[in-house]
Image (tube, rainbow, N blue to C red; front, top):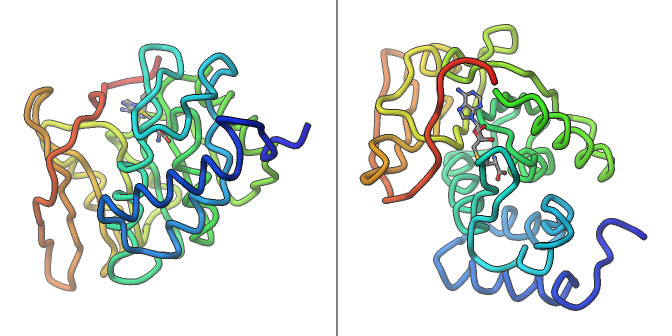
Length: 218
Ligand code: SAH
C-alpha cells in the first residue's frame, strides 16, 4: 500500500481536519500548513497507534521518546521560517523523523542528529519510504551540534536544554536563527536566538513541554 494513502482515521480528510485545527490554533504560515497537509504523519508511528496520528498530541515512538504534537512541529517550523526560508538547517533530536521530513519539503538541505541509534535507523527508513533524499542523518550528541555541516541558516532543537548550548549559537550563520526549548522539566519556553553581524539576540516566545536534551550517545 502507498504509505500516504491510509483509510479512516489515517485518511487525507483526517489530515485536512488536523490542518484546520492548526490554523485555528494560530499557525499562519501557509507553506508550513501545506506540508503538514501533504505528509502522512501516521507513517511515522507504530501501526497500533496510527489512528491517533492526527490528534494534537505527542505519541510514544519507543526508547522513552515521543513524536512532538502537530502544533509543536508547526509552531517550531513557523518560527524557523519567520524571517525568510533558510537553505541549510540542522535539527537536533530526529526521533521518528517527522519534523525532519517537514523541513525537507521546505528547505534545501537538512542535517539531523539523534543520540539513540535505533531511533535514527527507523527515521532513516521512514524518509526513504517517502523518497526524501535531502536529509543527512548523524548519530551524534546534539549539544555539540555538527560542525562539519556549519554554518546553518536555521537550527531547530526538539529537546529541552537548561540553557542554550554555545556550540549551537556558534554554528549559526549571520542572520541565521535557532529555535530551542529552554528551561526545566516543569517550566520551559521556546527561545529564538538570532545571530547578527555583531552578536546574538534572544526572544522567549511560548511555554512548551519537551523531553530533555540528554548528554552523550545511547
Ligand atoms: N523531532 C522529533 C521529536 C523527537 S523527541 C519529531 O519529529 O517528533 C526528541 C529527540 O531528541 C529524542 O529522540 C531524543 O532521543 C533526542 N535527543 C535528546 N538529547 C539529544 C542529544 N543530546 N543529541 C541528539 N538527540 C537527542
